[in-house]
Every structure is written in C-alpha cells, then in structure tokens.
Image 1 (cartoon, rainbow, N blue to C red):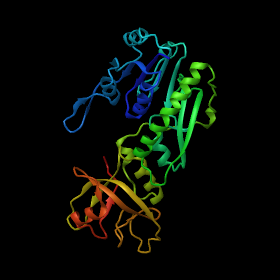
Image 2 (tube, rainbow, N blue to C red; image 1 turned 135 degrees about the vertical axis):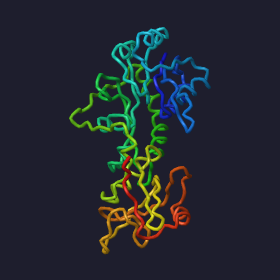
Image 3 (cartoon, one colour; image 1 turned 90 degrees about the vertical axis):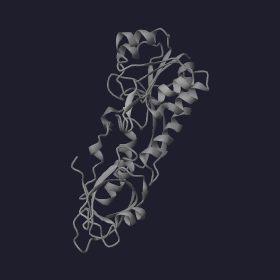
Image 4 (cartoon, one colour; image 1 turned 180 degrees about the horizontal axis):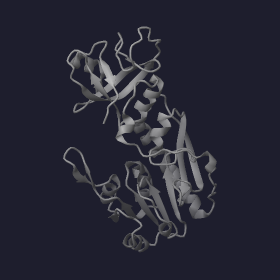
Length: 317
C-alpha cells in the first residue's frame, strides 16, 4: 500500500522502521521545520526528518500541512493511506479525505482516555496502572476517531514517562503493520469511541513540573515519574546554613510513611533527610541540580552539605 507519513516526534521512529522493512514503506514523509534546540539554540531538524534523510525517503518540512501547496505536494504521490504519528499539527478534512483508505493515527493511550498531546505523562501522574496504544481514524475532533486496534500494557510502579514512551513506541510498530494489513484486505473493524468516557491529556508546560510540597508524597512521587525527562519535576533548594538557593529537578523519589510528630512545615528535610509533604514524606534518590549532571541524592548531600531543616520550595517561575 502506498503510504504518506506525517510525523515529527521520536515516538514514531519505531513505526517508521517497521514500515520501511515491510511492503508498506513510506513513499513520502511530511514533518515540521527545524526548531531551535540546545544551549546554542541552533536549528535542529526533527527526528523524523533525520530518519527520512538517512533512509533516502523524499520528505517535506512545513509549518502548515493544510496549506494548498502542501496538499498539492502530498497529492502528487497519490497515497492510498496517510499515517499520522506525533505530528503536532491538526490535519484538515481535505487531507484526511485525499487517500481512498483515509488517514489513521497512532495514539499512546487506551482511547477514549487521555486524548491530547501528553497521554503518557498524564497516565503516570494520575496513577493509572495500565495504558496502551490505540490506532484510530483521523476525525474533526482531536483523537475522537473510530478505533481500529488497541494493545494494552501495565505501567510499572517505578516507570518514568520517558521509559514508558519508549516501550509504547515498540508496542505500536507491530500493531500498526497488522492494522495496515487489515485495511489492505478489507477485514479491519471500525469501532466508535464512547465519547462520554473521554478524558484529556493536555500539552505540558514547564510550570506543570513545579512541585508543591503541601501535596501528598504519593501525588508528588507520581508527578516526578510522569514528568521525567521533560519538563522535569522542579523545586528550589534553600539550605539554611548558606542561604544560597538552587533550582533542582527531582528525577526519582520514594514515598516514606510518617506522622510528622515534630509538626515540621511542608518542604522541610527531616532528621533522615526526607522531605516532609502534606501527607507522608519523600525520599529523594536521584536529583539534577541546575547546570549540573543527574546524580544520586547522597552525592548531592555531600556536595551541598545538606542537613535536616533545609527546605525545598515550589518555584515561582
């Protein structure tokens, strides 16, 4: 089947590899333009653009896939099916209706739960124990199309968003190939979503990672996992001895049950160097000081001479 692939993010690379090794290799790829990245803010091509270049697949970089020129270029390849994965642009009806087999999307949740840009993160933040991959038709409303296939997987108790992202990308690849085969031979089933059960997974902002230690330790531990590696769960560390504050990102932490008998304020380090929270406490295991490497908390403690009574606070910006 002749396929045009629309995507920008790393999540779709496993699917692209699978397509390239099948009889459904993409004939053409559409991706976003290069964007500033890194400390030097130099323009960096998307992972999909790099993949296309490395595999000698013709591709186009565009900020508006629905522009007449973009549609004309895609139409020239006469696709039978459009596959959309981690693209970051809304695809209009003119493109959806262009191929005879329509357009399908690979989404990292068990729809109708977690429609939106950050389903992996929000599933962990909200304490879900299971998630998966849904392959759906594109629709006017975001992630609301008919379901063609799903695959489920359990979320490990200590799994970060980055780890789950990579695992789901691997699960998606064989599911996509199987679904395309069913579309090809006409055996695929289109099942409407129950829209009354839809939940949202909005795009994350840096401020979503600001930790408020008046919340429960359990809630904060889930945020720490769900926000790693981006935007990261951040706090301001304020040692009482030096009075020099430091922005940090907490990468891993465990919940410690405590009754807080000393009535210490939320955010304060207790005698075991655990952070007192609104309920119970957090034992940090991995931390990344701003401008430094990710390290074990014990190395941070030694370097900053951390002591009980030091404070972790919610950033203001």
